Image (cartoon, rainbow, N blue to C red; front, side, top):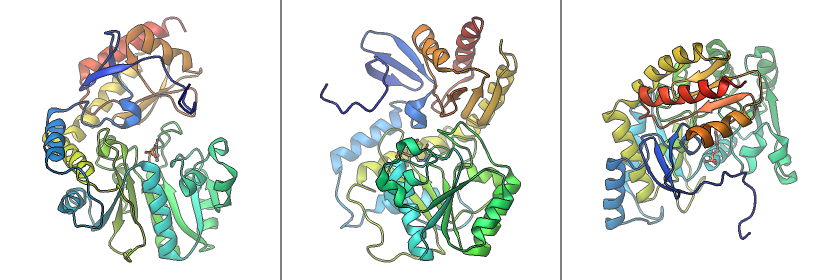
Length: 376
Ligand SMILES: Cc1ncc(COP(=O)(O)O)c(C=O)c1O
């Protein structure tokens, strides 16, 4: 075995993909209700995306940030158009890197070093990002030197007690938890969080790595709560599979030369991937489609053979059963050709399809589910 063996993998070799569909080397077809972990936003091999990337690579694929790349400014403007206040963009190449830069920037800005995060949070596997992740199993001793405290969603008392010390550089929050299992804080709590961050000079970071780029029926999931974060981290759906991430930084936080940096971040191909994702999201109105499919999903879930709680929003949605869903997921994949996702809560099945998913495809998911649940 030549690979460092860190992943639990299915013995499937994918050879092609289109929209929601995947095909393996044995000729079997699958429907992708997992999106390679919420990454495929506009659909696999979308023709506009493929053509734009092909033309870009024919022209120029890469140069570093030592020269000015106007595609970065175009991308900053396109994302800013989705926001109510002005932000500046810093580009990198993954979700963890986005959060790492967000936390570092918050620390530079406040000259503080503590971080406040939430129970069951997942923010990535790099140094500060994994320290702010509520899972000691994936933290090495080197990560534990960061000063991170965790509180529960909706615990206003704990939030006040921590922030009033004015020791925290940042609070980092997923307004819908991904890996944790689709839990959400109440809107009142999120708004109190915003107010307390302002009062105590703490930077509010919205981790939109999984929930951003229209997946939840709004461009960013914090927009369901009407708040203005100081930093927004992004990745996954932003590149539809091309490794691109970034942070939107509120104009109140000032840049200094050399503060942040990266070799690959914001290269021509990455920007072209993200710009073509924006084109398709807008042209095909995928944000509204995600919101509409949530209602369809909820209606179908109410008719399931076995009771399940629907969690999440838009097409960042899932079902919580009163049993471990590992076998159900395996059967959906191997008996019905349906890829679905897991969560750290083993009873939760996560549904994270490309946003081009149709009602007919959702029907196929529920047919598979109903057949499997007959045996429960
Ligand atoms: C909310 C959230 N933040 C950060 C990350 C880390 O992203 P990446 O795997 O691209 O480093 C993830 C990945 O699942 C995530 O769901």
